[in-house]
Length: 285
Image 1 (cartoon, rainbow, N blue to C red):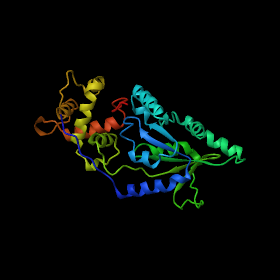
Image 2: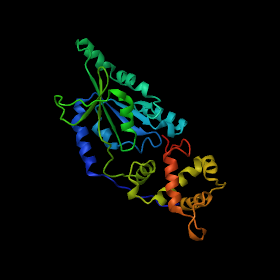
Image 3: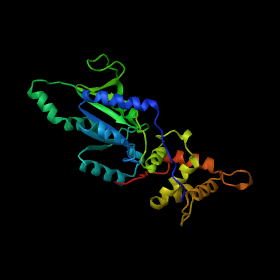
Image 4: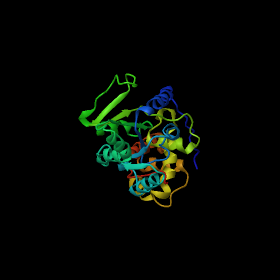
């Protein structure tokens, strides 16, 4: 079995984002955490549990169109059992987005009732949107805002430059930059983040990463590999050998007929990220 790539990536702006989130939490009523439905747990930032412990949370399993439907259903049930509200979304097609605002109002229903009892009708509800890079957070915000997207600045307690986006009467979202965490304690977490493109490819060994992906797919998604890469059962167990086979089947060769594993790795990763291999989830609850 090929070794796991060691991935540590924490640019300085992410430390700044963490401070920003901490600073803004008192200004919002709940937090919507955007995660990737293909790797729901690995695409969560564990620091958000600590930072947002006192705020109601909505888990948005985004890019659900790229994930295994049965696995997504299991994850939704898992998060609901943990006490979160959970929703599967596909921001490109808009699927699931119509349920977001009603869910925000449901999760904050007691607060709305208290406002109404005090005659504070029309009080604005504010939602912070947080998530790791490449989780689809920006696409979610743009899809929800539509033509209403607007910066609202110079608010009491809100420094200029933070971006508040009006959704509808009485509801606003606060956008925050994508944030990873300083150290991945589990190497497989960094690996899965790299597979979906949340870590820059430039810092990675693509051949090792593609080999690991093929190893992961072989047990659960054999039909995908047979139809897409023209492989045959039984599969070899080693990821790099699988990558060499894929290169040969796709005619990616170098001088002397040797497989061009570098080109094959780029192709495998690109096809996986674009959903061309089908709906694939890399972890289960």
